[in-house]
Image (cartoon, rainbow, N blue to C red; front, side, top):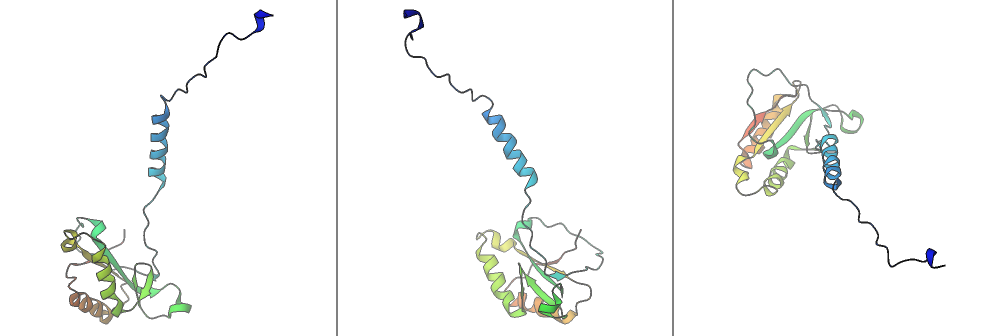
Length: 150
């Protein structure tokens, strides 16, 4: 009977972790490739006029966008041109709060470099654009650019 008895404790073999960093990097690269950065949903229709001159923005993360155009949900917002700040329809009076909140979210050094980009439909009356620009002047947002879609 001694032949079948156990001779001491057997150890559990260790798990080989040599390929673990490779698997982690493959998963990391997969998520980097399939993930997109969130872009704001446009609630207004914007058909931009042709641009005659283009300038590249230095840092897009310091740019706040104001969309102006006819609303896509005309039964809810009507047919007049509307202003979109972030993901909601607003009035000219709310631009000051929008600019203040955007400034507060940036560091002190980046506040001087902030740019406000206007995306305005070609059919919008100039009075709305003038009102927006006047309100931007009142809240000292003097770096304004007009952007074009690609």
